[in-house]
Each structure stands twice: as structure tokens, then as C-alpha cells.
Amino acid sequence: MLRFTSLTGFLLCLLTLFGCESAASATFPVGVELEFSGSDFPLPPELREESASGPRIVELPCGPAGMCPSTDGVPILCEADLCNPAPQTIELPVGDVVDLDALAGDADRLFREIDTIEIISVEFLVQPNTLTVPTSEIELFWGPVGAVDIDESMGVTFMGTVPAIASGETGEGSVALDSAGLAAFTQHFETVAHRFRFFARTEVDLEPGGAFPDGNLGVAVRMSVRISGSLF
Image 1: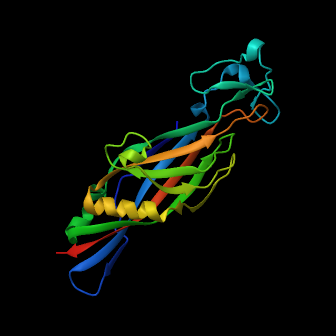
Image 2: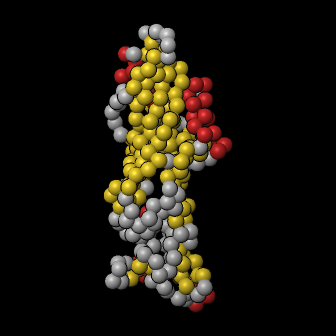
Image 3: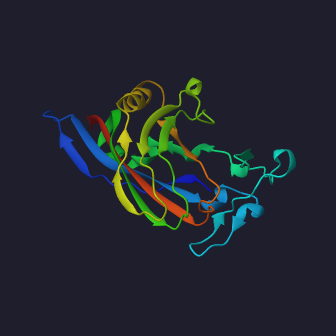
């Protein structure tokens, strides 16, 4: 299953005076976790065969009139006389609603009012990774509480991209952030609401003869968030 879950806790990392006694900023982390499993691609068992390097998608000839084993989760097409899983786009909400006021609760003892908020960086850590198939880029989005999927008309906005992850690859890096999406995030906080949802979208194209989807992938994503406001 592909999902994100909010991490609990608040850590105040930095407090910087702007040059007057009443204004300050504080930076703290907001973490989410992604889990990706081979079971997200429920291929028919007829397409699985064991090999010396592990399970693979069998090169199964199409039946009469191009018939192939069926599945509710992944359409199976007849292409070049072989049964080929159709490319899939996976998109879904990321965990629960994020309440930035609640996450920054300890700051209430420092700030009389929080005026603005910025996402200043996003890092990711891939570990563990036993997934037998690679992922393409994973796009991250933010949206208002009322959004139910990645729909621009609902205010859902692109935020950044986690690079493609090879099968078995681990490591860490920075999310490529979209400046327009981050500016819209700040504007929404200042003028509309302090509560958000996050969404993820990725694409996978499995091929006959390739690895059969199996195993699990974990990605921890940590956003560095800066709040600014007036001190008591």
C-alpha cells in the first residue's frame, strides 16, 4: 500500500530575532512516511513465474481474440501478442489532515501571533527497499482540507518531486521543490487556513519478462518549515 503518515512531535530548532524585540522566526521539522508495496499491483497469478533471479512477469501469449488473464486492479492488455500490464498512475491522499498550529504548539509560548509560514527545504531517506521493481518520480502535492484527490479545481497544487528509485536502492537526497507551489502554500496559510492535506502521485509501467512486483519500499520525507511572527 502506498501511504503517508504524519510523525508526531515538535522540535524548535532555531529562533532568530529580526532586529527588533517583537519579531522572530522559528524553524521546525514536519515528517511524513511513504510505504510502497508490491501488493499495490495485484497482477493475476498466471503472470507470475519463478526464475533464478526471483519472480518475474511471464511472457504469456494472448489467447483467442487477444484475451488475457483479468484483474480488477491492473488492466492486462494484449500488445505484440503478449499479455502486458497497462501503465498505471497511482495517486492518493497522504495520511491525515496536517494542522500546522497544532504541530507548532510549543511556539505559542514564544509567539503572540504567527504571521506566515514557509517550507524552506524537503529531504528524503530511502530505507528499507526490498521492492523488486523501480518507481518513477514521485510527485508531491499540497491541498486544502476539503480536497479529496489531486484536482487543481479543488486547490491542490504541485509541491515537488522525489527522484525515481531503482529496485533495491537506498540513500538520501533533496526533493526538487516547485517555487510557485511553495509560494501558493504560504499564501494559503496567510489568507485562508492553517490546515492542509498532502497527496502523492507516481506512475509504473510493468513489462513482460520484467520483475514481478514484490517486496516493500519505505521513504521518510522531512520538511523544514519556518514560521514568522510577533513575540509576546
